[in-house]
Image (cartoon, rainbow, N blue to C red; front, side):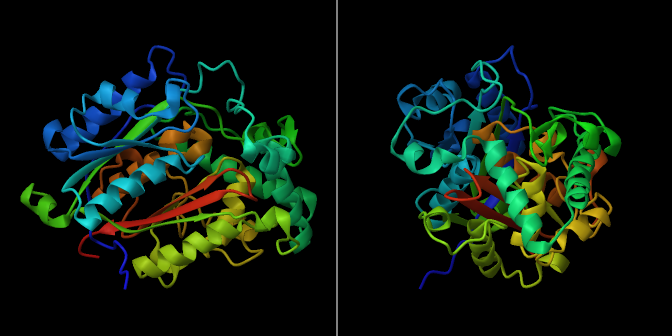
Length: 400
């Protein structure tokens, strides 16, 4: 019977570039920047890495969608390098591949790395994909802001929330992330914004205003993983370990049947349930020290708080307004600024979330360090509220 990967995989090194408009660098330079930090942090030689997983979703550098650009940039000679893609959960997919390889005993040390160079494409948002079989089934929503605006409308209708009350709550989500991002030197946007500015901003897709949407960034992040036993031999006596990684992918039920009311994300709930079971988390509201969630839009973060079982259904609005998810609240959320302010280079985002959990658990997060961190969580949502993919990862220390 399968037992999962709890505490079978230790993270011994991580790296992350500064996210933002990196006009002076290509994808290969971003990969090297993140990799060098991870390698130095791990205290190993490049030749000790036995396999690598490279996450990239939209980057035009990947001609033929192969892993060759990453292998060349990082000089990963003679080892298997696999390129993975799973929409906005791509970075977590890379980490899952590396972690499962170590947990299975296939390799001793593996690399997960993700990168995206989006600012050079000429698009104001994410690049438009070529027409394919998925687009015909999935794209009728028109755009990402429109799809998530529908989530907001359904949520408001289900719980009878006044339009202005929801607008204020999602504005408060963005306000909190901007405040946190100021303390993060690697964040794309490091500027506090007042609630008045947020609520007066131009509407992108009702009720989402300009400050309710994450930006488009360049960046890369990397993780080096191994077994706890090897971590000990390297002098890392109580390393950060992965307690669980779970993914849930839609099979079309949400958009193809009447079984979903549009007010939540079924894949997140499914992945969270499995991740908590694997990690031994019974009460996430009490046990989690921090969360990094997929705040592509502020409404997404608010709904995710309920999908993760931290706020009760219909209760996230109150929790947000009460400051429960602030840096000094019960479960700090987006302590590094999140997608909203750290940035969202698609292939790197899942690993960027892992990076913040890793730093916080080791007490190395500097000005934004939280006290007494024990368990952290990251959540990715790829695609749209319907017909997408969700990933939930739980982190801790080996001895917890």
